[in-house]
Image (cartoon, rainbow over all chains, first blue to last red):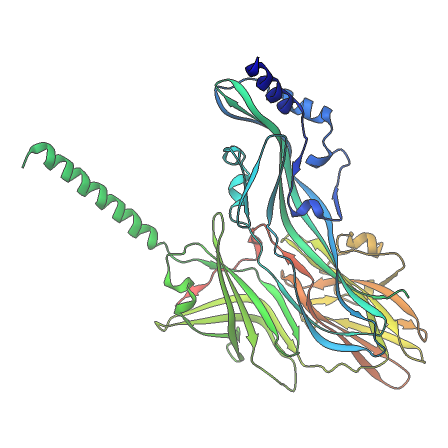
Amino acid sequence: MKKTGILFLVCVYLCAGPVTLMASEYRTFEEITFKSSSFDLLEDYSETDYELAYEEIDKRKFWGWRTHTVLNNVRVSFKKETMMIIRNEGTSAIEKDYTFKTKTSNATQLSASGSIGIEAKGPIQSFKTGLDSELEFSAESSTKTTEEETIEIAIDVDPMTELRIEIYGEGKVSNGVGKLYRFFRNTKKGGWEVFTLTSQYYSIEKVMIEQ
Amino acid sequence: MKPILLTFLLLGFFAVSFYSINTISSKHTPLNVQTNQKLISMHHTEGDTFKVDLIVNTKHSMYVYEEAMVSHKLQSKDELLSLPIDLVKYAFTEHDEHFRISLTYAMTLEDASERVHLEEAILVIGYDDNKHLFIPIGEFAYDFTKDDFSSLDYTASTPIKGDYGYGDSVVGQCIGLASQSDAPLTIKDITLFSSHVKPNMDYMVEVTGPVNPLMDLETILNTPYNPKNPSVAPKTLTLSPGEKTTVCLPFATTRHLSVDHYPIQVVYGDAAHDKTLVIDDFTYADIGLDGVPHESVMRDGIIE
């Protein structure tokens, strides 16, 4: 009876689908846009999307992962954030050399749903339970990290004006689903996603402060 | 000695020899150094720095380590002009199939009567065994023009991204301008202090809506554009007193240079004379973050 109860709980856990999404910095971007509206990020997968993708990897396996790739390095554009650099609420202009640092971010970032997990060693992420080595994108994630970038500018900021830097960029997204088999039994399943940052562009804007 | 023991000893000797030969040969891979040729254009302010990324094929060479580098300078291709620079930051990172050396240099030149300009700049690194690495890094410009602090200011500066077949780069610029004059001002020219990358004034357009770096350049210009087209009929633009506007221009290029960091000089005139507004040099783009260099613009370095 006790065994049946535990088995039932395990089944509920496995069948519950994408309960939680473990995500990286890219999921906090203000906007991420695919060129085609038919493409989705993992967080936008519907239950039907998961079911259709899981059908592709239904065949049981003695040991290890079966994976299905839905998007393979599809280009995306994004608006990352707007950084407020200087806010001049005084009555005279600020004239100065200003230095700021852009946030350090991994060029390759991961997300997962269901019972697929992510682990991180410092800034470097990988999928748990060997899924990393199953996916061709995984090898890249261990090495591609961006350095912190110091940006300097000499600038005049008028009274009641703030200086903002808007960050836009482009990247590549791969995602899909995976099932882990142990002795022909499916023990883990969920979605995986790899986001690779390829470029960032900085736009300067001086904006009047609304009173 | 028993034959079986002798056999094991011999096998061990062969294994160690094989491993050593393999290791020694891998450590003697010829060093190959590459870089993306780019426009390095700067406007003089205190503490100016610029960065050069070198891509190398091995870490088993003394020439990739900071400790072996004893001198750094920029020189023109004809070696007539030489510019001392200070290495202020060294970083070595491993990537999938290559290694990246990021060198950040500080300018030591505090004043000059005219612009320092190297159309084909060579980075020269001297080593402690008296050998030198010469590597072309693109075009270098360092300008000392003083801003006129007067009747024109900018409200926005937005790069426009594009790709002309040699990797992502900045291919145009939109600039918000605001007249602070009581008289009409005429925008006459816009430059990046570069000989090879110039805003093409023939195609200057005023835009009314918002612009962002990922918008298509030709859509903004509302016309097809060839970056090799030289400027033949430059447009001007007159601003009424207090008027604000945003203008967008494509860059005309005569060399395959990656463009990401540059100052912008706006030359404008009022009734009396011409003046300049300089938007200080700024990093408008981080390109190649996924570690893939632009293969079409690489040049091999030479160890002499």
